[in-house]
Image (tube, rainbow, N blue to C red; front, side, top):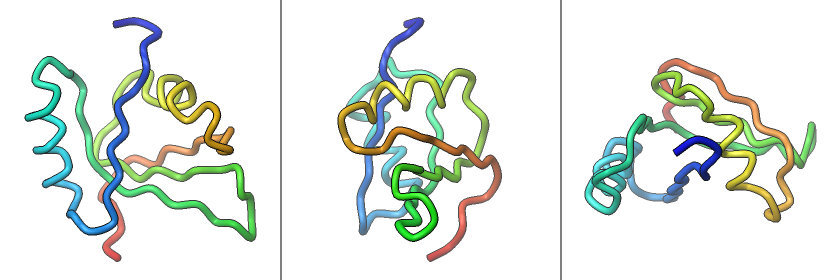
Length: 86
């Protein structure tokens, strides 16, 4: 699905792996699934969303930029590696 939207599921309680499982159940045809954490540093840059994901998914930043359009967040930074524990 070139140029499509990225699926983004956020939950303040569930751990990332359970959210990944929920995405797989809800969207069985989805591909390139990854999990991680999202954060916004209001003091440094309130329009920047930093995503820490477990693996690189090609085109993720472009698709998530489309997904976040209209939310007030216009910039995305993606860090690959183990998500930070909170």
